Amino acid sequence: MSVPALKIDGLIKRYGEFTAVDGISFEVEEGAFFGLLGPNGAGKTTTINAIVGLAKISGGSIALFGHDVQRDWRTARPLVGVAPQEYNFDRYLNIRDVLIYQAGYYGQRGAAVAKRADLLLERFDLTSKAKQPYTRLSGGMKRRLTLARALIHEPRLVILDEPTAGVDVELRLELWSLLRELNTKGTTIILTTHYLEEAEELCDRIGIIQSGKLVALETTRRLVGEGNLQDVFLELTRR
Ligand SMILES: Nc1ncnc2c1ncn2[C@@H]1O[C@H](COP(=O)(O)OP(=O)(O)OP(=O)(O)O)[C@@H](O)[C@H]1O
Image 1: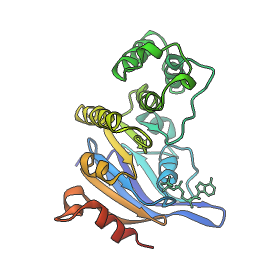
Image 2: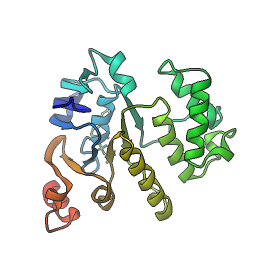
Image 3: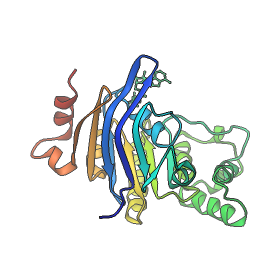
Image 4: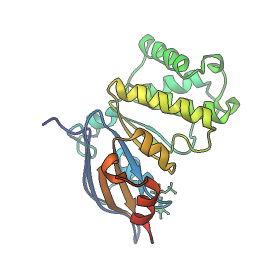
């Protein structure tokens, strides 16, 4: 069997006395489109931050393509790209440079990176804004830039934290098709969303977190069964 893209084993994350993630374990196979769902405050973003090295792990372990994210972070970190929920772009850089600087964090520089930045800007329909700072972009453009930045260093796994929050129907459909295309070409995707129809539409497997614990881990088809994801979700996450 091949090494999973992500293997989380007994992950615990505490903030002081408070346990935000309480012993979560799951795996995501390479090539999968995985949905990480849960109500507000369940621990999704905390889990993502632990995977990408933004939050120090209190217990358990995380491996990306077989590389432990703590012991072997130099190898593990470039394997993942994250599109965070909140915008954290440098407002003094134009968006082309945002992409180029991001690649620099992974030691990638030069003409190849500039070319990749231009290709991503084109693919996400941002070429006409290349020389503008992100503050001059519309909400939908900022979402697309978030995705482009997550992809600039060509990670094998991309994690998207609510990529379609606050975008209109048309852009949502456009982002869905971009994500599907990315996945079809071989990138493993992990998505968090509060739009259950989005998870049902895109994800082949779903994990549901409630109060820092995993309460479901199933293929989307089996989880939904004859019913609908909203009913299943509400049943599993009732407080
Ligand atoms: N830096 C921090 N310090 C203390 N508590 C934190 C910190 N970050 C998150 N928490 C707490 O951890 C819990 C999980 O938060 P997290 O952001 O992971 O939830 P989430 O599932 O991503 O929620 P949402 O869907 O609202 O984004 C919450 O109770 C939150 O208040």
